[in-house]
Amino acid sequence: MDGATLWSLLLFVVIFLLGIDSAFSLLEAASTVIHDQLGHIFNRTIISGVLSIVGCAFSAIYCLDIGLNIFDVVDHYLNTYIMLIIGIFECVAVGWFYKFEVLKETLTPGGAYLASMGYWVSLIVGVILGFHVFFDAGLVWIGILVWLAGWALSWGIAYGMASKNGCTG
Image 1 (cartoon, rainbow, N blue to C red):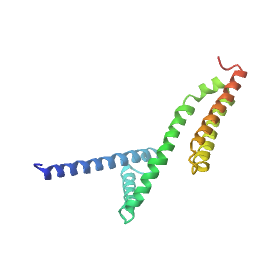
Image 2 (image 1 turned 30 degrees about the vertical axis):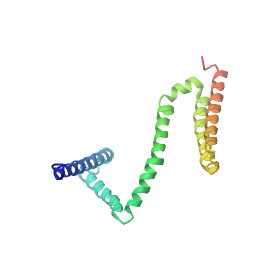
Image 3 (image 1 turned 90 degrees about the horizontal axis):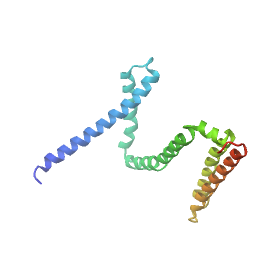
Image 4 (image 1 turned 45 degrees about the vertical axis):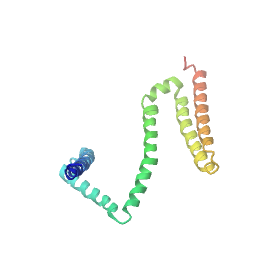
């Protein structure tokens, strides 16, 4: 290919600039939040400097001999477990905290709390059964069934409470 050195140099510059831009955006977002909270104590220059030093210290760990292994462990846990937890918390925020008052009016306050807590208790019990008790036997689906059954049972009881109190149409 003609000009392979030029294209390689341009690719390196583009990737380097993308990395610098990502670092600036992460630093700016964190320093803005801290400045909004502690702006009366520290100015933005000090906050950005401290965040840069802390970030450099944490990223220096990856320059050690075991840096690639540490990176692999951190990457695995962030992408496997933390992203799953963030997704669950987003569902909680949308489903239970946003317009929870409407759910309480529809199902009565006790029914709304029962439906919410029934979901979480059955989810925890289902995960414990599916991934810890039945995992070795290959019966993870039992945990999923326990979760769905507990969820349906809690919603059924909550709807029954609401029907008994005349809250549903």
